[in-house]
Length: 120
Image (tube, rainbow, N blue to C red; front, side, top):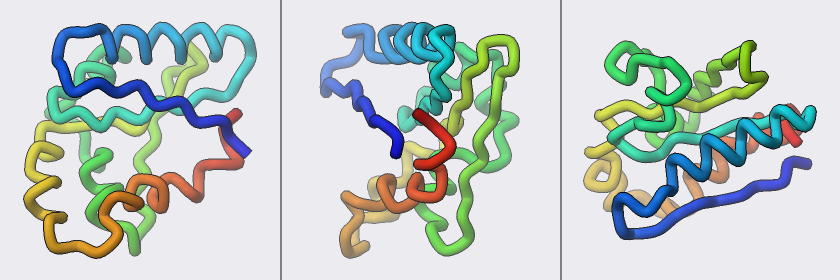
């Protein structure tokens, strides 16, 4: 079962993305199987791994809104031995779209469930 770290802070510009990328890269370098989950509509973690956020076809937005179809589009950077569930600007609308959904606070957990055994 994977160990899950969440780096969050309501304030912008405090180093969340930088810390996440560096922690993930460090753990991957130590031989750990790492999945980064970018749930910021700015998609800076996605861009930091060399992925064009505007060309992502299925992102964390899709994973949150389409639980029935297993929408995990996990991309791997073989050079860094690091995987990411990318984000896209579309994620900005997810909060409004999910406002009436029951158990919306557990949607990310449920979406990531199939990936738990693939990562450390």
